Image 1 (cartoon, rainbow, N blue to C red):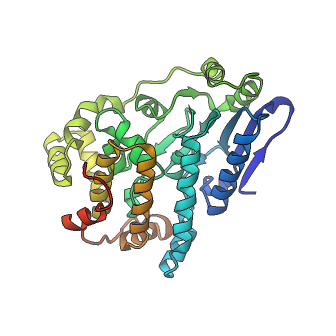
Image 2: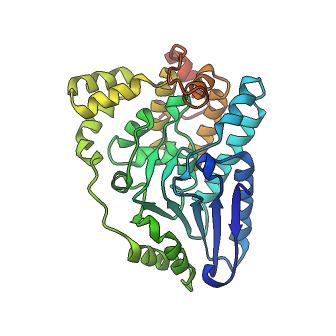
Image 3: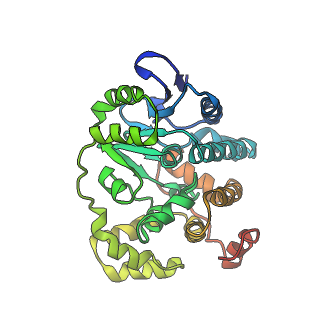
Length: 343
């Protein structure tokens, strides 16, 4: 099974356990996984015997590396966009259920946690990192945009860090994620099973009790190197035009700024322009409005050339040499937002 559910007595007590079970694919999400996951969460929410949900990934490499875009790519290239539309709709529905979940939702972000993996962890009540965490929102590298609720949580990172992460796809470690408020606690990876057993013994299943258990196993987080660049990030990424952002980065002439320029240069120009705009707007929107906005833009991107070219270059052929289309014109961007309020 690609996803396993446990609801047992004994050491699991009143916990529902979800295990993403595709370690050979870094536990990437398929449509069937999203559907099964969402259905199980709905059932557990109604059951009084289930006090909370724990989510983890099989294997030692990844919690979840995102969506399984290879099969979606082949459908889209063949002109069949229905599977992509269905996938994004149900993935976002799952993200929304997690955000609004009425019971404690504990995600163990152990290893690679990217894209769709963030959507099934960041929105939970307890985001638990391990020292193996590698977090990123790398969508602009495949001609897409940071979705799965990222238009809501990225703009709420300190300063302009969300823009930096969303545009460049920069990778974070556990210390960086903690600094940005994307995780609540860091625990040793070898203690995960012991922690789950301890959580299962929490009688009342309250969020406060679960927090106390997690804190008992927490390890002191190392200092975040990313925090050292906060002022430069704010100065460079506080602009609403990509040209101004790149100009500011060029003026900095630091190791961090030069690296950011290199990262931006490899991304889809259209993805960068639209990502900047959705993150600007997301800062002022509710979570549900952000998800509505993301669904509309997912429909736009799955019909765009850059999306398939990005997947080809990064995932299929892996030549890392995408041939991007010219950036969308400014009036084109405005037309895409015609159904949303002016912000």
